[in-house]
Image (tube, rainbow, N blue to C red; front, top):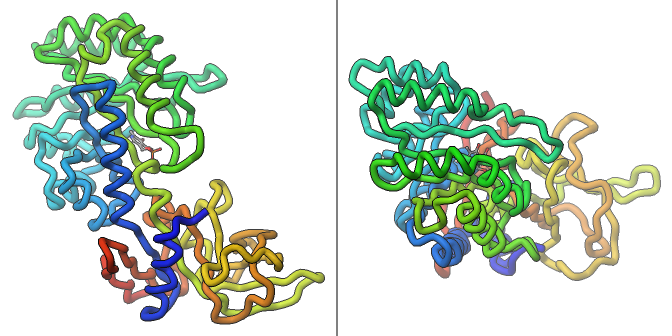
Length: 386
Ligand SMILES: Cc1ncc(COP(=O)(O)O)c(C=O)c1O
């Protein structure tokens, strides 16, 4: 279901602006951030919430989170530069990701931005920097549900080697990253911490100040019933207790992306054409699935906001692109008699869909934001198709 604010906001903005456009609820972003912080702080007194830029780097979003006191998780030099320009001080940024170029490592080192090392080769490159290394974290590999190792991070023997190299260089381990796959559920976080218990205990003892334990992102979108923040905070606290240092013995860092933004963004289109095909009512929208690329892999609420509760009709919903597979939904309920000009809102587009969207045939849609009682333009429409 869409929120009432997104539904009403779509109707209001569409009275003044052409479709398709994205709509993002900044007010809900702030409320969600504060609630998440409050819940995690019950378990972890020292908490850093580093928003994962890759999930949606829209300036209105990142600057709002900077103003709310958040931190930033970046995975490239380009994201690092954006975070700095958005107002995150270097001490409020952490640099993650599987690949970091020598220039990116040097940039982080010059600023003192902590780097989560993903491979031994990367550690070698960091230690070879002429002006010294930044704070160094070790990304510890975790296993998937089937027992297979993740492609990310260091295996146990590599962790031992990395610690040895850092000891020889006289550098402390600033922290560890124990991230599990996206949407793995609370128990996966506890299990990953317990798996690495011995390393965590030793590093917590050796740490200059307090060991930073970063459990990454991967939490479900805001509002999924039965999967609230309480479950995740409790599982991570339990993992820290079982692993040794306990919630009071670590600086906890979380890197939420999807959970912060997915539910608060929507793509707003109008029906362009209605056709009958093989006895089915088919609606062709004025925007394509290139603007909401996860529609086939993630649940997206799709509503006709003018009459959201009237389920008298059933429709196949197609995008505006010139290929058969441009399908938003194969069979959805809607009001009877939907036709050209009627609004359709595709919810759940606030994470990944917006940055993954690609320009093709038509220019990139603008983004409008609901904020306080009104709405504003937060990203102008694109002006080219190439
Ligand atoms: C290192 C890291 N942190 C955080 C995230 C954010 O994940 P999510 O959007 O699932 O919260 C990702 C996603 O790929 C990631 O790779």
